[in-house]
Length: 434
Image (cartoon, rainbow, N blue to C red; front, side, top):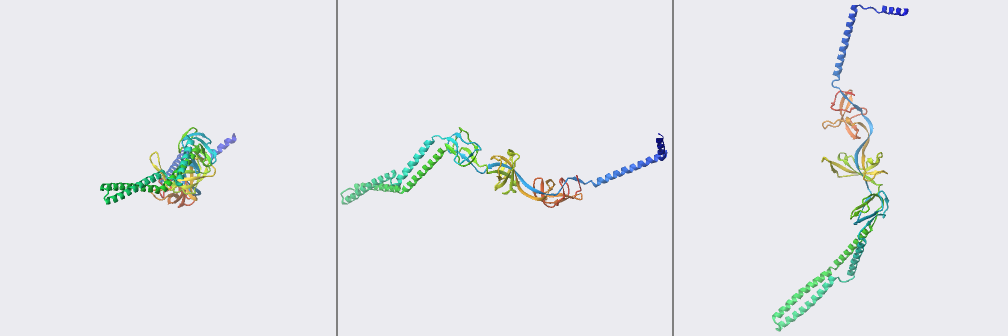
């Protein structure tokens, strides 16, 4: 206790005591120091505001090098390159369908049973018509006369006989008239009869000549009849054979268009057979991207029907004529048709809707974010490069893009800082990086 008291006394002796006059002087010193500090702070703030009055805060990105891949997106439909639709060649009824969709079939395999009314009767009639035509042609070639030729020959013989008789009668009447044995009227009657028979003779002779001259044409006509009858028989045979419809090729049954009991007519599609190992995608590329598409370019294939899987393809055909499509608002879009072949085994099926990404270019390049590009008043592409706190508008030459970054071929160097939110920033403007 005594030591604590002694310590307190010692401390009080070391601190000088202040009188009333000294205390007032000390307070004045504090007030003056505070005022000086406040003025200094205000002056500093004003200087800071003046120096930063025209400084704009910006976001930046450094120019870097990367492997850039440019892709054109598109969508299309899967088709099979190797397919054949089997059509009905007759009218009838589907009795039985012997195959199922997806089933593999061979050339000549029975696919369906069809009921064809009067098939056997029509076949017999076609055979009879061919036999009759062939018989008529054989007789004509063997020297037998046609009915027209027989009739022409008979008419000519009759006309010739009458002509000769009337000619003899006229010559006799002329001799008698010269001797005064007959009257003028009898001579005139003989002349009229002769003129009439001569005209008939000349006509009959011309008719016979016409028939004889037309014999080769007639033979050609008979041959044409035989050919026609033979073709008709082949057609009926083919139609009758469709009672057991045969596959025209090997492959898989892609679709069946009819059901058992359906009534069918000529050219009714029955089923489609194809080869799923050869698939393509038909797509339309917008006109704005069409110039980038070339045969041989790679394509990546994706779709909702096979989520998680991506397949590869290659551009095999590029159209030379654009197509137009009208939208609901009546605007017209222009596209270029493109075909992409599918490579390798896939889960794709004809008719699927798929998405494509066609690789049109790739390179190792200096790149900047697309939003860093500045195009004002139809000027050339530019970027703002920051140097010593100042934004310098610099013209650049652009290349390909992947939709996020843009290749810069000229105008920037690696690690340059470019403004990514140029907005209304002006060349030479002071900036501060956020």
